[in-house]
Length: 189
Image (cartoon, rainbow, N blue to C red; front, side, top):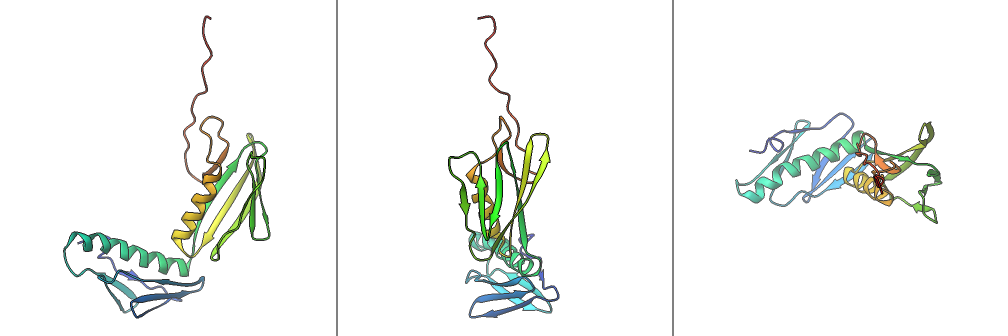
């Protein structure tokens, strides 16, 4: 039995869950989501909790069990509290700002990079925060769909990942990028 799959998903107050034609609908204070579990998985809604069961002990069903339960849990938590990821932008001359709903990044290219998030994703810039290495900006990616939040945070980070030599670029808050030593000079030439 899957350790994660066998745990019931509690339905908190303020969240409504219903199942129609194999599609789960979640409604809460942050918004609405839908999720379609795999047709083989057995999903039951009872007494303020959701129970996910698998039909057999086949390897395929075992692999779906925990995943299905966790995706349902993420949908419940998304409509109740939402998800967010934070990125740090650091480097001399690097800048992040919002123009309406568009994120504008100046990260050392000859042009500025403009990012228009899809519906359901909210971008916010905190900064500049003065540090010894220059200004630091914190970019917050938030929304109710955990997958979309993670995907868009990764897309933004990919624009200019942090350089391991100088430490300039984008990284997740709390991420540790190991610094590398620069090129050593030639001795006794």
